[in-house]
Image (cartoon, rainbow, N blue to C red):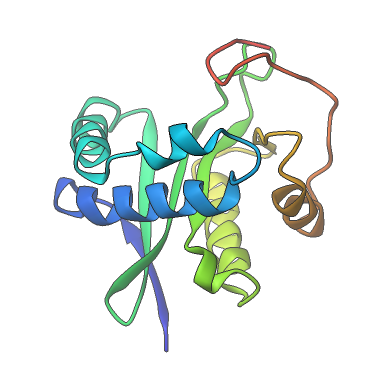
Length: 159
């Protein structure tokens, strides 16, 4: 089974959203309230991604990871959104269906993302993670990321 990582298009929005929703529901269980996770709607999120793929095409690079034609992961990259890191690239999002956790596919997606950021001219990279998401933190540390101690009160707040 070969993993294919390719640029996501509007036609991929439903698969991209499906990975997003199922990954959120697995990764953020016990972190984000169940009622919020339960109301995530793939069709609505798919529409949002389809619009975002077009609206942000010059700022954000979206990728989908497929295994034998089935979407199992996704990735979004771009310029770091933190005002104090204007020359950093950012892994804006990286998600993998929980049934593939521990398989090595997450590492392959992350390696792909870091390589793409290098090809885009970035020499440093950052990402944000919920402090309660210890599983993701361990993964990022294995990938040689380190916690910087910065915190936000919400995902929308600037550091």
